[in-house]
Image 1: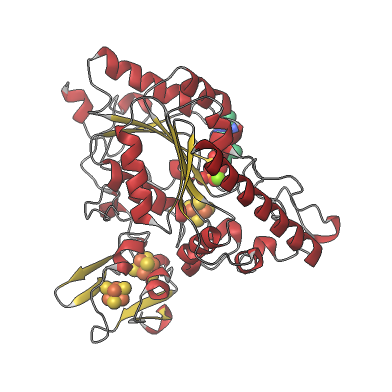
Image 2: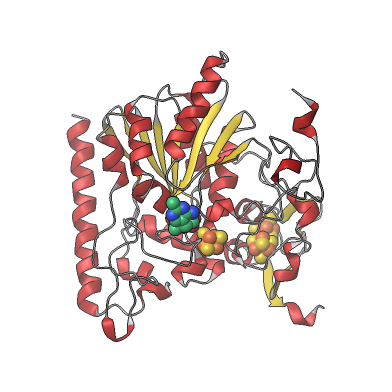
Length: 298
Length: 102
Ligand SMILES: Cc1ncc(C[n+]2csc(CCOP(=O)(O)OP(=O)(O)O)c2C)c(N)n1
Ligand code: SF4
Ligand code: SF4
Ligand code: SF4
Ligand SMILES: [Mg+2]
């Protein structure tokens, strides 16, 4: 397993909330990719986390871009480097967007970037809502979660739609590599991102990044939540390499989903039946993933 | 590269005063001291610390370092999230009320 490199390319003094998973996502990703990286960031928490001019939080070039344009903007940076004769294996171009910026408003720019075969890594750091603007639901908000646009109270209008499966969306583009990674397993996360860096063509990384502010969870349990999400199969760790599925971290003992849900205020209102329904769906998705792994490795 | 790119403007009047690409000499830790946000303060018991580095690995604010004597917190930046205390395998870190220290 890859060790966590000591080099820090994210400085202290970020404006992220205490216990922010998105801060971890950047820190580990840059440890994996190293200094020869150029990053494109749209509107999202990470547009704010580095602070304001003249403060420099990341020790790599950073291009701020409009909310819906990460895929297009990283394609442009890659094209400029190509024009200058810079090999994609020498400088890595990254699009680093939130779940809203990737799965909702940025999905067409992402799709274009993947379909054109642009040699970049497109990263979705997933805190499961539009956090920067005050916790609105996104396509990545899971079933049952409270957000400010899926309120609880007498309306009982918590989210009633499932989480969008972005791994399947990107896989449908026939890209060489896609992986889910978690900040609770930094060694594995670094290993998979380094693997992506060396593969030519478009890559996709889905980072699970808890948000204590939006999930109404204690900042101290950010890492614990990551481990529970993997052990309950809510967020399985797997990769798809040229169409072949591999679950690279299977839980030894699968734990009940309620052990994961109960630590987060955003799920507190859920009646017993809905918790059971969520459990059933998680089980079904997990079985399906096991089948995909079996089928594609025959 | 042109000199323009490296120009630092401390008090810009409008966008025309800014360099075309911003490459500043000011890492964020020189500007933003986030330690003042803290309501809880991690206290490391150096007798207990086995110097495993897990707290360093999981600190989202790069504010803990394992030195010769054990884990040392940088209180100028530590936001008091408590992840280090939660993840320490030998419970060498205690979260105390910040108010008792200031
Ligand atoms: C075109 C456009 N619409 C809306 C916004 C306002 N806006 C800024 S950040 C944001 C939410 C971002 O959510 P996500 O991508 O999940 O990142 P997070 O803030 O959760 O890290 C919104 C709606 C904007 N900047 N541009
Ligand atoms: S709102 Fe959530 S994702 Fe955004 S900085 Fe705070 S903890 Fe991090
Ligand atoms: S996690 Fe605990 S034992 Fe390990 S270095 Fe930190 S304080 Fe010491
Ligand atoms: S309390 Fe949080 S910010 Fe402070 S040293 Fe521990 S992990 Fe880092
Ligand atoms: Mg988000």
